[in-house]
Image (cartoon, rainbow, N blue to C red; front, side, top):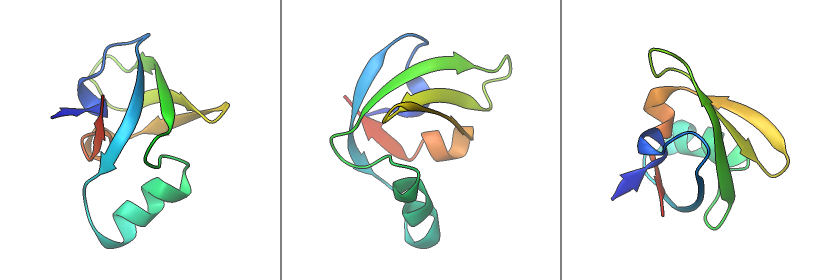
Amino acid sequence: MKTLKEVKVGDRVTVLRLHGEGAVKRRIMDMGLTKGTEVLVRKVAPLGDPVEVTVRGYELSLRKDDAAMIEVE
């Protein structure tokens, strides 16, 4: 299992599954990160938090903990 947190800068991946429950999972889905969505990792801050991605044509910053809940291929 590979998560969005582990993806290198410049790689494109596809969301396979969201882990987590309740409000956290709903918030991630509301940001456009749903199954089958293509994600490009643009930047990672020096300490790894946050991760900046492009999803559905816009830039989004995710906390490391949230990125770890997103399984990708």
